[in-house]
Amino acid sequence: MRMIAIHAQTERKRLDRSVRCAEKRRPWARKQRLRGLIRPDPAVCATAGAACGRKSLSSARIQAIFTSNDTPLGECRLKVMERNTQEVRDYFAGASPEKGLDPLWAMLKDLIAGMGDGAGTEGYLLLLWGDVQEPSLRALAAERNRLVLKAIEARLPAGPRPPEHTAGLIQTVIQGSCMQWLVEPEGELAAFMTKRTHMLLSVLYPDHVFG
Image 1 (spheres, rainbow, N blue to C red):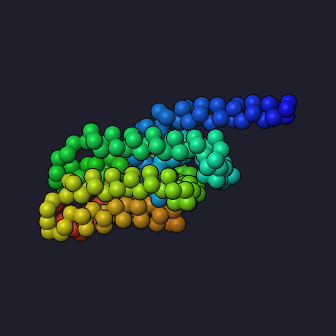
Image 2 (tube, rainbow, N blue to C red):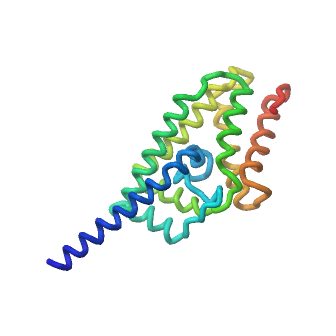
Image 3 (cartoon, rainbow, N blue to C red):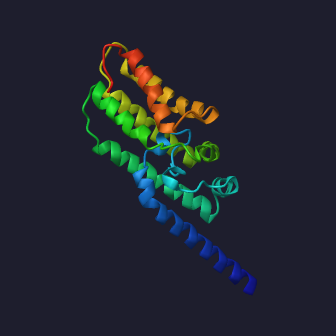
């Protein structure tokens, strides 16, 4: 009985530590709330990362987070992702609905800027793997992806191509450029992704100047 009591106490302490860690990350995660939307994660989204001087999570630590879905760590990750997804909903709900190429470009630059210099980004491929394996996390990641896609579509002009097709292409280039940078890093990640997105928009809309 004593061993059971000790085990229960240990589990409670571990849960408390996990929750405290999640709470400490909240201000930083809110600041970078959209980072996971365009990185090949989703999001922390954990939008977390090593930008702004944060230390990278070790592979073992990341694996522990996404392979323990029936443990306090797994529950903590789900809560963090649910909170992050709600922040993304709130962000787009409060964003300016102005349509046009300039408002679109401003929004895209804001989203991409959250990627920072890219330090530690490769570690979040493991988190992505966890998200697509666990149904509830996968559903949240898919929702965040759709929120970004719809936001792009809503700001595109009616022509010369259907907005839904163009929005999908833009999002593909943004996310694909992140993966490309991981294989062949060139400068800072955010700058690299911004440059690739600018190139695409200039091809799609050659008569418009994207400043």
